[in-house]
Image (cartoon, rainbow, N blue to C red; front, side, top):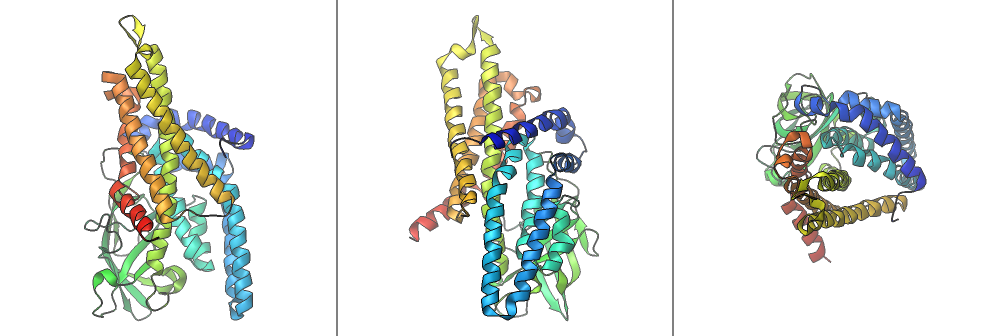
Length: 423
């Protein structure tokens, strides 16, 4: 794959018109006002029928999961049921990959924060439940997240863990009869202030001498307003102002087993919660590449137009070689990131998934490229680039977080290197 198909281009153009009409005029309010992004996202879903598609897709996934559960009595039936489910998931994933990435790219021309809010709600919170939940949990919580009827948050990061998200986790889950008691503090939680449903990770505290770092990680589904659960107001931050970020505080939050993801702690010695989190890291990191592509495309477009219009010494600055060098490097970055996105689409169509190392490499390069292109755009604009009205200022602030969230650049390096050294 070296370019979008005609069908994909038609989808791109339709999404682009929506963004121009519905997002562009409201960027100022989304970025600097008190307007959460969820109504804009819901309108996007409704306009293109994504809510209906998500509902149908989720219901098919629930049916497959239920069929797989019913066939578990017989080993052969279980195997065939799982195989059929996997085959259906691969086919669906291949057909939906481009449709998922194209809106991400287009939204990031103006408002990358919207993509973060959307991706966490549907991809991380909703996706986790749809992948690892029971049919009842998928129906009760997952369906509304996938259709955006409700807003989701994915709560793993803690104040003292950061990049050591799993090992350094201190949030605990203590068994109490048929229930669990949850305690802990999560931070940098996208959608945290407004989330209706929260996917919460905690260490099992069973009273044993097992060191905290080695304890099993369990995943729970929480609802806003539960006794003992507090959601903070949105943080003030450097960029992604249209993506609300906050903290969660849990003090003796009691939950029944039906809120334990999969309604099982897993096999003895298993790490289901850890594997669930790592699987989401792959999805999240691949998504950052699409976000980077959209931001790079917009920075390049704005820079080309400015270089043509800006006059110095009675000449457009586009005639100066140093300006041409900046534009050329931006285009090289755009091509490289676009090829990574195309590769991801092709792999999904072939039913293949990125390894953690591949996703890390994709994210590392794309995030660095986006940040460098955005800062070069600011430099090309000179003093105007430092002013918010020229937009590259916002894009530069937004791009920086690509090198921090979903795993810092440094963490990506370790994941890539470990994979190389393990071969």
